[in-house]
Length: 500
Ligand code: HEM
Image (cartoon, protein in one colour):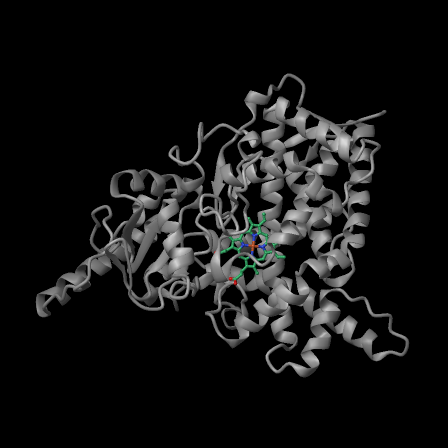
């Protein structure tokens, strides 16, 4: 049964039950003032108002109801903040009370809800994983130490593109970027390629995309917890299969490594897996199960987000040839355009490319509401109360297009960041695509490095052409909403090798 038919049936059943209940019981009103919001229908509240593109619907509603508003999604009170000031309240002033997350049903499979770094509440296990990421796995030093594996992967990426350019084959930037991101991540973690061919990357991409799509699919069981056991849309059932596939791959890789480590003369790899296995010997909180689930989250959180940013960045560069020219010129001057991939150490010398990536993240934040937060207790903000257990969404998509913050907000203009000290590290609340506060994305540095390497190398070694007869204005810019905001139509372009 589809979402709409089930909703209608469910609502009819609920109306009857509710009518009977209200006939026999007295209603009690909470004594706090919720943020304003649109009027609610009985039972379903504002569910239908979310539409297919909630980032657009909620930005429109914020124009009427203000920068902090409340909605009722089924039984779930949801507070949406849509301005820089309110985002600061949530992510900075009250971060300590608003750092847990609502756990979607689609995450509650195969015990993932007990181990997921991205979803478990602030707890000793979460703190331990955070500490490990900050000080070891994803620290500057560790990333510096592993940059040679990413350099090697970038050379391969350029060879793939070179082959396509020789036979005049169009490249789907999303699929290419996915293979590259996956292998950049898998080499940083396991020192191996998780996928050999672009086709295999497509398969793994499908599993990861299915996982994120299902996490992003509106699930009646999340809005009406009474439906949890029924799983009316079959989301849990399908998700369990996907998560199983991913966990099985990691289980196999960890077992192989454990075996190798037992052997004499094992050559330490110093990749994330080695670091974690060594730590797990003395650390009671980190064991094999935790490591598998941590890798699941790193792959799921790290691939779609990075690839979608790459695809939007390439799309914007192709639509804005003067920006492309400037970015290429800067690369030519700093790196030289002799076909070699750019180095991670070049990043700080490429302010214009940095501005291109910031501008992409401003206009196309891959996680338009961040990952929702959940109130640990009642929290008063701007004269309103966010009640305990309410979910909080930060509409960074709206903030990125707020005309009071950005001149010509819909214009792709990296120049706006030249000479500005706004960065994406969670200090400037007008640009927080990676979130901020305790739950800020731990993969920020790695994501940034991967984006620079891929985007910089792709545009420094090749010119990019659309299909014959297609103009840059014809590129379809429609967005597809899920947990990440993807480009609905894949960008397919022809590479032309630059010869000196
Ligand atoms: C352009 C790429 C990326 C973007 C835009 C992005 C964005 C985000 C956002 C918005 C959050 C939630 C922050 C909050 O609640 O305040 C998040 C969390 C997270 N991200 Fe990323 N991310 C990216 C890449 C990565 C990468 C490459 C990794 C792994 C290496 C990663 C791992 C995670 C994890 C594990 C969390 C959950 C952290 C927690 O809840 O404590 N992300 N990310």
